[in-house]
Image 1 (spheres, one colour):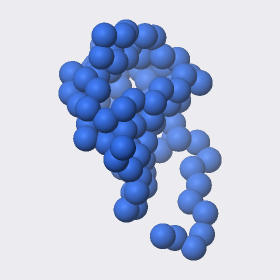
Image 2 (image 1 turned 90 degrees about the vertical axis):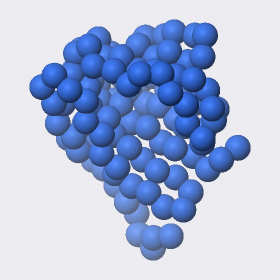
Image 3 (image 1 turned 180 degrees about the horizontal axis):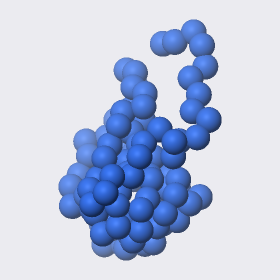
Length: 107
């Protein structure tokens, strides 16, 4: 545990959207959580997968299609999603986009 605040003034500035690709960067991790920023170019995606831990998705910029089990939604800046562990999900960018993923302690 740290004895000082950890801050990010602008999450989008922590990663550059790659040309024709996807980039991820761990911004913070400790024994409980992991904070990962993703940058997607248009039409880039994370194919369907699951996570062993619950997670939060926050869209920072752009527009993403999120497939969450049987549900598909469009997520834009300000969108917030909590996913339970082991939920099949995928992400696809409609335009250059930045997403923040927080992996939480297990359920």
